[in-house]
Image 1 (spheres, rainbow, N blue to C red):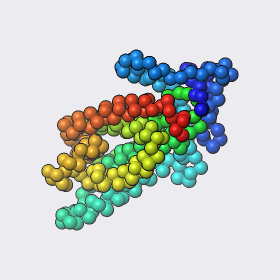
Image 2 (tube, rainbow, N blue to C red):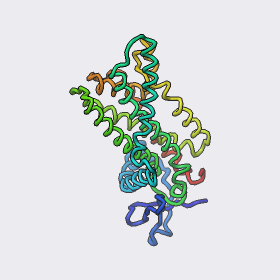
Image 3 (cartoon, rainbow, N blue to C red):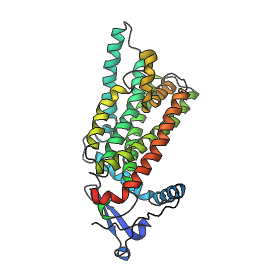
Image 4 (cartoon, rainbow, N blue to C red):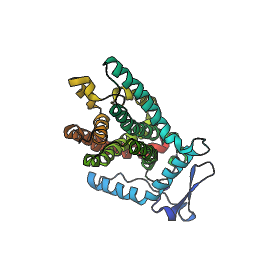
Length: 311
């Protein structure tokens, strides 16, 4: 059975170094080689336990930044396109969406408008972020960081969170390119654009919770990663990326039950139409984000002591 060596201070107990191939290795210090302890299982109150775990996670924030940097660096290392990969997937989604919108315009006997293209572009980048975060988060324990998970103790939620942050970096690159395009096209904006960062915070919160949930589950149920990949592949057809919810009339509300859908619709409304998001459906997504973050974190921490045995 593998003994996990705890780290209370990164600089005192272990050195996490990046090798030439971009991977991270953890080397316990000589002063701590013989020290080992088990995670406390004594009930100290739910709120107190959450507070202690968050404080511990905060202590390892530098490790979180380091692993995020490693993930970004490895993703673009020795690639011809470099950071262009960050906008390649959104471009493919936008092109697919244009085809769908054009077919819809032909069926409705109307012209394809610039607002249709802008809506698809605004939704494609966040959707690419959602897919990338969940996909890399699901594999962050079982495949990408097996050595670190089994040999040394620190908060393992760092791995799925680092996957979200590295995907957020890609999102930033793609968003910067979109801003330049919108500036050239002189897309009109107003004060409702201030809703965009609020909506994005909710989206990151939702994705972080889902990533922790599927990362932990994939260690104990191997088919989870295949189910996640299947849902991410076909999820775009059940999420208003290529289309708008109002195209379906009253039946469109069923599509909004997907918690990502109101966020994408809200982004499209505040960026391309200058309108605020629907408060009711935004609150619905916000509630889902809070539940997924707390539930995913609790589920992750509950299974964490058995991670090393399950890999």
